[in-house]
Length: 248
Image (tube, rainbow, N blue to C red):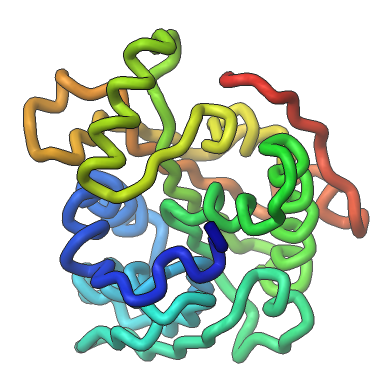
């Protein structure tokens, strides 16, 4: 499957977005404490403007660029408070494009693992490439006092292979695809990418079939990293951590 075009023709707003609503609610809670009016945001892999929709629902007067390669970007949201700028391109392409503004916040929600998969290599190598490219993008486009907000799914720590296999069958039945643990990011891996611990980290069970949250091992996570806390790795072009082929 070509991950760049994986969501082409998908009604993301009324399918995926509703299934992973817990993730978006968690992101909304975090952004409500991290953003202010007049902030500029770059949402990487924002599909049909999901980041802009979340920020608009908070009543925050912000400008949001959405970098999204799939045709979901043509599903333009109706917004009251947010100035919205959709840009149909991949993260790789965005590295060579001048953004409309430097960002106070770079947002990436349920997209990091999909972007990494576009590198079409092993899970570990995909993450290494993503790390290098994401850090390059941050170095070029995030204000010195800006933040990175990452929303990401993964499995409960300690989940057995049997439990994961069961969860993947449920995910595939509702979303049409699923991911093995090694393809998903953990907070430890994100901390490794940035060379620092998150200033905020929260997680919550995400039952995509709408049932009891206690009946799922799938977790919605949101972590906030401050650019000022990020190690010198971000200033070294092409530098990226090494990842192992294992579920962490």
